[in-house]
Image (tube, rainbow, N blue to C red; front, side, top):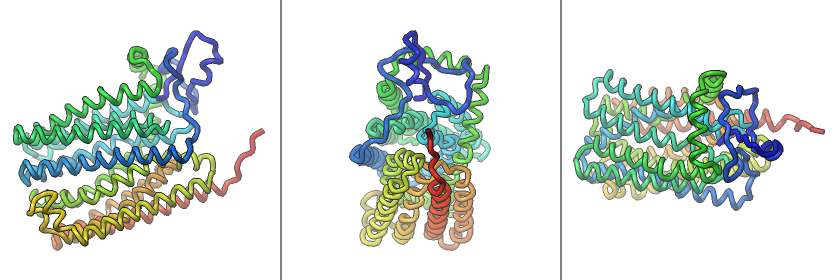
Length: 477
């Protein structure tokens, strides 16, 4: 949490608590904090390998359970609702996620890799809240302009609001991740995973309405934010709640007076390329759903979404490992530790390809039976689509892993044309293949796009590492 500490004690006692900034900042927009239980804004030195492995284990558990909760939501709807309800839920996510991912501006990645403390925690949080408000308004307006029914607009907005609360927690996760405190993130994800599935199941079971199920999800997402995430970050940072509230009010009052808005704008512009990248990543996964909805209808969209959810199961693990390894990769890169960076990256690549291979073999051997058992028999009518998607999984996971590495070396803007090209490839593939081959065509389009994304990410990472690692290390007296 990037916060200034000011006290009546000796200047030397608080000098080490002062955040380092890359430019002169106006006093009026500084959030100043008085002595608390501990120091603020001091990154711990790089931790031993065993701590890294522990962090990976925590993030793996948290991401696996959270990923399974997303899958569990579809299973709950498939078991207790109708196939049209599953299709409406998938359509809502296809609308909401690209908007929220763009508005996130990848602030958490910027926060984690901001080793120079160029911006404070309050700036990251303020910008996140502003962009989330605009995003929710856009979702409502989009639903009205698109001509959706009132029920669809309400359920989509509620689902968007529940996801927006998660993006608020995401900024808090960034502070924990910088300190390599992954257990707090994992516990939060576990709580949210269990409560979200239970809330949606309860709401749909009691009311037979997707909107009420989404409303229950929103309520329990807020409960996790207020009941665990905020107290956890206050404890880790050593900040008293009353001090935080008092100084936060002072920060927001003075935010737009002397340079605060300019710094937020600068932060937004820094994250804008990655915001577009995240939106394109989300669009790349959801473009097939738009074409399926248009050409084949909600029924086929529900089936494809159920199959594609199994593709994301492996990404849960790769994301967990990538998130845990990102701070270490960033530190190795900044310190020009070529060996440490290369060793960790090689382990990540091998792991991602291994997950893809396991998924492909499982789809060949047990795909149809698994779909019928997990969902219902009508969801097992396209086993070939599952095989194609699992064939794409290895490249999909590899691209995700390399994406974390590219972001860790703070290569942001060049990712924009890469993911734009990948999304364009998916769209062209769907235009050519979905009308003639149906769901299989959508799966083939995803495979082609995943190959392009992996190759492009590898090229960007190679260029960044070659440029930095080949530079002479400056000698300081």
